[in-house]
Image (tube, rainbow, N blue to C red; front, side, top):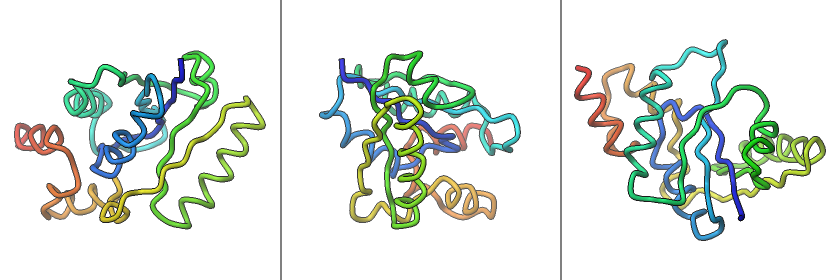
Length: 156
């Protein structure tokens, strides 16, 4: 089975993430959306909310599992018997950063990183931009899936 892990904080999941995930589906038998837990990081959305966003967004896709993990991504990959890490690239800055991590992960554990370039019109979307727009009361609905919009409306 070709299994990939798509790691991230997904705070929140964006249409950019969804673009990468949907385009990767034909490449793998299973994709684990792995929400990393970092006790030192302050999140806008709780871990439970982030899991719900992803589960609702991909509820009809049997090839996708949503899981959480702590520690090194390569250790999680080994536990899940995943030979690939999936990453999206928006720009050259992402490429340089992700290349270094991908090379390190391969050296440490022999796990390949597969990079997909963001689709046209999606490279400006990031979770940090969504958080900033939301924090200042702006409209971020064009950057996130319905699950995030609906949850946010329920909590008002």
